[in-house]
Image 1 (tube, rainbow, N blue to C red):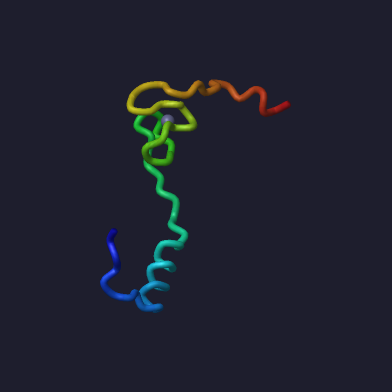
Image 2 (cartoon, rainbow, N blue to C red):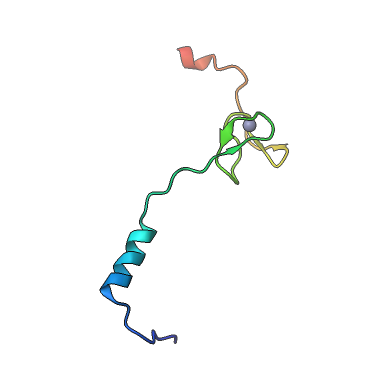
Length: 67
Ligand SMILES: [Zn+2]
């Protein structure tokens, strides 16, 4: 079993903890098919495309939203 060679000082431990708990800004990339902003490595929520294929069925007209 791997054992730590040296004790991690309070300062170093707390610095690591604060670095790992930071709130990072949301990363967005442009969808290659509809040019909307979307999360990387995820299907586009607007057109449902991922890697050139339609993976999610999206509504073309949002008529149900008015009800
Ligand atoms: Zn899209």
